Amino acid sequence: MRLCDTNVNNPTLARKPNMCAHILTVEDEVAIRDMVSFALERHGHHVHPAGNVTEARDIMAVQRLDLAIVDWMLPGGSGLEFVRALRKDALFASIPVIMLTARAEEQDITAGLDAGADDYMIKPFSPKEMHSRIKALLRRSQDYQDQTQLVRGPLTLDSAAHRLYANGEELALGHTEFKLLSFLMKHPDRVYSRAQLLDHVWGPGTFIEERTVDVHILRLRKSLKPLGAGSVLDTVRGVGYRFTLK
Ligand code: CA
Image: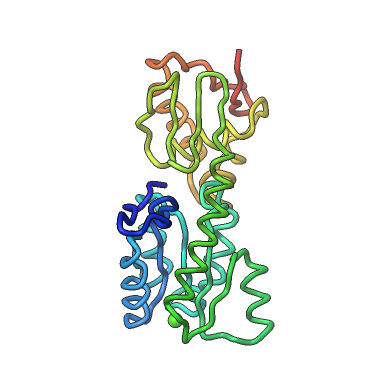
């Protein structure tokens, strides 16, 4: 995560720069969406607004995110289900999520937190309070991500920066290859079948041909080989694939 510009007029702020995050907002009410965007952009954050779950998924396919603010009642799909799905996705499972909703009953709040939201805000809300809560969540998540730089042999996975390096060189990978290699790196020396990989990397209930996995493994090997890391992905005949160091 890159840092926002420090405030040169205020030495306290200059020592503690704000984190400048990519924030997804999933909200169908335009007035609220605009208000959230305005409040967050003022603090230097990049806001990626979506009006429904489908638009949110389109954004997630191409944009690295640091936090998501999700409305509960959305056209064409519930925000609660969306949060549940995020938590099951290997790449997005650790993104902080705030549910922003008009549903104020105790059972609603419990359901939102149980679905995987980190925080819950009830409409109408104070943009100032929202920003404070975001700052708290980002601080915690940044601390967490700083500890999650994973080094395995020639490969380094930097989760915070969403980057992968082989022998110090950054790998130029597509979104799916990045997810696939990250997943295998996090679970070394275990063989995964194509179906299991589809489940873990693409998500449960994905209807994609198992051959797709082979195509992505092939692409990964092509990217890794010139950087001297071509042998980390084993084919286990008749079973599947495994990340291993020789
Ligand atoms: Ca709504």
